[in-house]
Image (cartoon, rainbow, N blue to C red; front, side, top):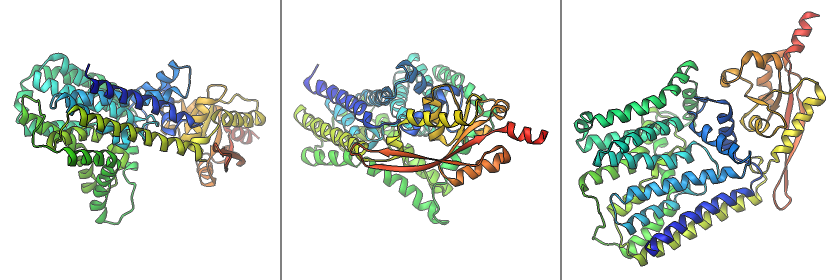
Length: 492
């Protein structure tokens, strides 16, 4: 194995270890990670936000490691490394060994492959699945092996079962096929139909679940895309520019690193190794640009904002595109220097994240989750002898109670059965719930929903302390949903 390849592998292992260990400075898992674990525990074929795949992965990994929080950070890094390995494999379809290593290493200068990864969620999974999907599509398209087409069908299904925005990758692949004149070629190919059948078979149970639950998750997508208040018509222009600018800023360390090496070592000699250069050029352009541009086009047409983090997986071909269209000399000496720079970037990102974990007093980082869960359990026990089976709260407190209470407690998020269709509404209304609210407004919403069955709120003060002893306090409200109290009053 060449020395430069060994160093590249060491870089991947270094990033994996660093990003698996540094986030352990947090006292609590991110909200997205906790939510994914709870989804996997209760939601079979769908959630009210996303498809079910992230929940399956999170919960069974969590269970495998004895409900250990710290293992979740390694799970994120498995998907990151998996994505980088397939970016390299895809780059090798077009570039020399050293150029492919350089292209893949550049990805580590993108925020999405480092600072954003400790929060295990659908975006982190996408970082792994998108390059895999693109790789097997390219292999199927160029080599036409049945195994590649079947793997493509499986991976398309997993992508869509993870997050609906995987459709953006399908758009990119579709544009490539159109540009390359391959539509008729695919329509005549029985292996493509096998891939389609495999994909539909895997996705169908989720489609059926959506139909049974009034396509609730699409309401979430709609609500998240309204994240702006710029007056018509400026939103149609500002939101796409804002989204694309965010992607460039998140990739800035990678782009600056590339520019430095390109200026020092630029060359007209290409290291392209693809046998079909025209198709390769079209494929790289489409997969590097179309996903992000499609998001921007949706913003342009709709006038709605797109969350910058939706671009998480869209940049997976940027390093390859740069090294393909504007190459620099990728001899061992130059690539060795580039790998050294990427070691520095990975270290700096991890150090910045670690410093944030140490100095912050944020509730999302410094919550003593087991202690908080036990405190609320105690409030219920002091109030009634009935067993606590449900908690009504926002996502943060609801999932903390579901994961860290001493007994199994079901989180009725926002106290709305319609948003939690995996629970028995009649059972919930019979057994009642402990309520937790972050503020007065939230508690008032609960009272509007259930009236006299909701007790008057009581206050509890939570403290969040950083590693230097600085403490921030937050006052939260708690109370009780007791339908039997209403029934007793009516009897009297």
